[in-house]
Length: 147
Image 1 (cartoon, rainbow, N blue to C red):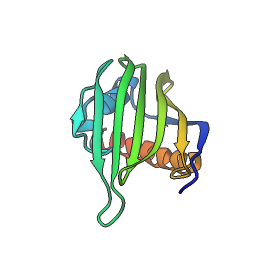
Image 2 (cartoon, one colour; image 1 turned 180 degrees about the vertical axis):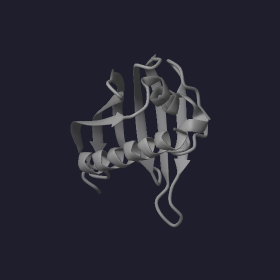
Image 3 (cartoon, helix red, strand yellow; image 1 turned 45 degrees about the vertical axis):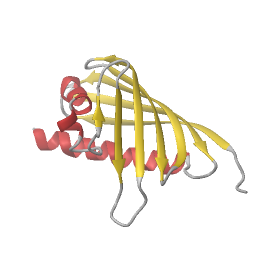
Image 4 (cartoon, helix red, strand yellow; image 1 turned 30 degrees about the horizontal axis):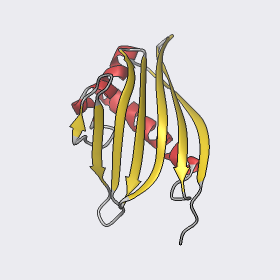
């Protein structure tokens, strides 16, 4: 039997985007805009109490399921959601994420804070933080493409 354990971790990733907070918020709140930098949602109900769900993965690779519930949404300022991530039927993690959008000279400062519970060594905070950096880079490329 595999050993069962949890690892708790918090990480913060920041980005500056040369667009308004309204544009960055739209990239999270609009399903078409979000699908340009995140997985295409199977369910997308972006509101307090709403949920988002997506599944898939690379050809021949692992299959992932992302299930989120929106807890706080302040347009153009803040998004808070809880989510689970599963792979091939196994729960990898449970997280609480806060996305803050701050207007700064020349654009938006995005502060992404994730408080995660990583389960049984199936994922690690370091791997997740690396993936988050890649995700926020993809968001930046998407925002540049809209300019």
